[in-house]
Image (tube, rainbow, N blue to C red; front, side, top):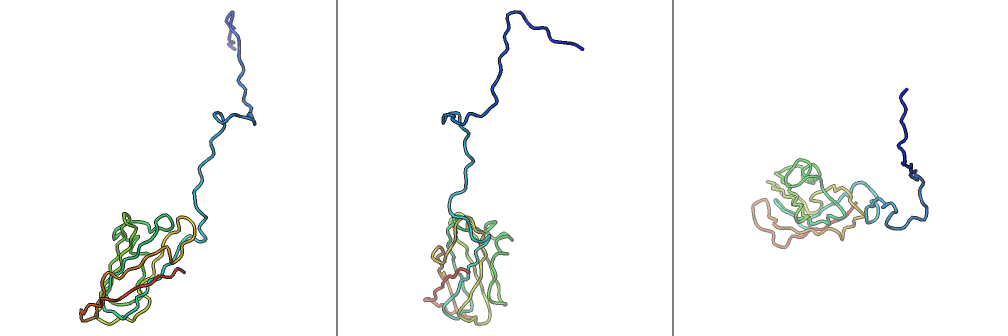
Length: 161
């Protein structure tokens, strides 16, 4: 078995492997960063958007705080569309999530009159904290009767389930 021959005049040094409990800040371990904000109560936040008048067609914009909630995907991606359930069972719908402005747009065009009340239910992912209705802003961009007559004073409201 080969052995190592010591070199004349060389000295060996030992390296300490114990942790110093009184380490100075420049040698202490850096803790792993933790997310800020309160923990989410649930994995998702369900938001109901209602319109205060009967309509045949409507477009609403729902602004949200991206630091609290999020919808996976953006634009008209299937992940976005799958998060919006319209209350009406008939008509043509479209959904668009603008990540740059944190605004979800939902539109419905129908040939029959839709009653006032629930327009759509949107399911967001919780990012941080607990979202409330005050964290969302809803506006009716346009609304009209089934015959195409504008409803200029339609308004919408938000509730969080």
